Length: 128
Length: 456
Image (cartoon, rainbow over all chains, first blue to last red; front, top):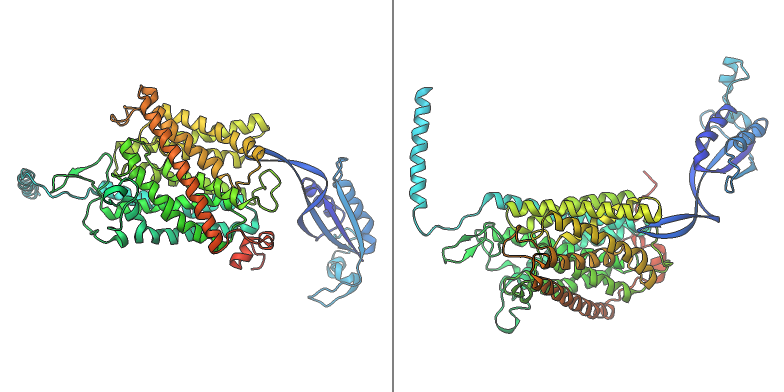
C-alpha cells in the first residue's frame, strides 16, 4: 500500500479530480495549503503594490494498493500539468497497515470494497 | 348609515372649532414633534450600527486573523464605556454652559449624570425646526434625552475610528485608559467649541454639519499621533499587511454607508427638507468617491479592487460629513471625487514614502478625508441649501478662512492633547503590547479567544 501526496495548482484541481476518478480512485482527502517559495505574486492593497511570496496550492492525499500506484501517479502528472514553474510535486510513501473501522478488515482489503467487486464481477469496478 | 356620517361630520366640525379656539390662545406650551422625534430615534440607532458592527467589520476584516476579535472587542468596549462616560460627564462637558472665561472652551457639570434634565424637556439645540417656548426663547422639537442619545453615538464612534491606527499592537488595558482619557479631554472640548451654542468656533461661524472637524479630523489626527508614538508593527514591511477577510471589509463599509444616513441626515435634528438634502448629498458623495477610487485602482494598478472601492466609499462619506447640510449635488460630486484622489495618493504613495505604520489608514482616510471635507465645505456651502450660509464658490471667502482656522485649531489641539494623554497612559499602565503577545496575536493574548475555530 502506498500513500500519494500531491501538491497541485488550485486551478488544476477539477481536472485532477476527473482524471483520478477515471483511474479508479473513488476517495481521497484534500485541503488548501499555503507555502513559501521562490515565485511571488503581485498583491495590491489600497493602491500599494507589493510582492507576496505566499503560494496557495491544494494538497491531495490518496492511499492506494500497490497495483494502482502507477496509474494514479500518472493521472496526476498528466492532469495537473501546465508546463509553467510551480505545477507542484507528487510524493509517494509506504503505508504500513490499513484498517476499515466498520468491518475490522485490515491490509489492502480495507482499501477496496470486496463485496462490490464480487457482485459485479467486473474488473472495471472503481476502487482504491 | 347616513345618520352616522352626519353625526361624524358634526363631531368633526365641533372638534375643529375647539381646536381653533385653542390655537388662538397666545402663549402655547411647546410640544414634541412626533415626526422629528421618530426620525431622530431611528437615526440614533443607525449611528450605533456604524460602530457595531459596521466599523468593527470594516476594521476587523482588514487586520490579520489573529487580531480580528481584538478589534471587535475594542469597538464593543468603546460602545459600553463611552456611553457611560457620556451620561456621567461627557454630555455636560460638551453641550453644557459654563460661566466666565471657560464658557467658550468647555461645559460645566450642571448636566452631569443627566441631572437637571427632565423627561418632558425639549432639546435646547435645533437647526431648522424650532418653536417658541413659554419663556419666549426658541427651543427644539425633539425631547432633550433623544438629543443626548443621538450625540452620545457620535462620542462613541469618534474614539472607535482611532482603532485603525493602533490596531494589532496595543495592549487592551492601555487602549481602554487612553480611550477614556481621550474622550474626556479631547472629544468633549472640541465638540463644545464647534457645536455648543457657547463654543468659540461655533461663534466664529465654523461650519460642521455632522462632525467633519469634531469627529473625523479630531480622530484622524489622534490616529497619526498614536501610530507614530506606538511605532511600527513587528511585521510591518513598508506596505499594507494583506487583509484577512475582505468580505468583512465590504459588509463593514456597506453598514457604515447605511449608518451614515443617520449620522448626516439626523444632524439636522428634524425630519425635513434639510435632512432630505443631507441624505441625498451623503449618498452621492459616497458613490462618487467609491467610483473614483475604483477607477484609480483600475487605471494605475490595472484592476479595480474590492478593498479599494470600500475605502473610497468611506472616504467620500467622511468628506461629505461636515458639508451635508450646506452643499448641493455639485458640491457633493466635487467633494466625492477630490477626497478619493487625495486619500488614494496619501495611502498609496505618501504613507509608504514616509514609512509610518497607520495600520488601517485611520489618518489617511478619516484624517485627510475630514480635512478635505471641512475645507471644501467652506468652498461649496450654497445659499440655496441654507440661505444663511455660503462658501467661497458663492463669493464668501471669509467662510473658507474660518474653516481653515477650525481645522488648524483642531489639528493642533488633538495632536498635542493626544501626545500628552498617550504619554500619561504609557506611564500609568503601559500601552504597547509585548513583542511576544504581538507575535502570537492579540485575540489569544488579550482575550484568550480565537476566531474561526475548527471544532464543532
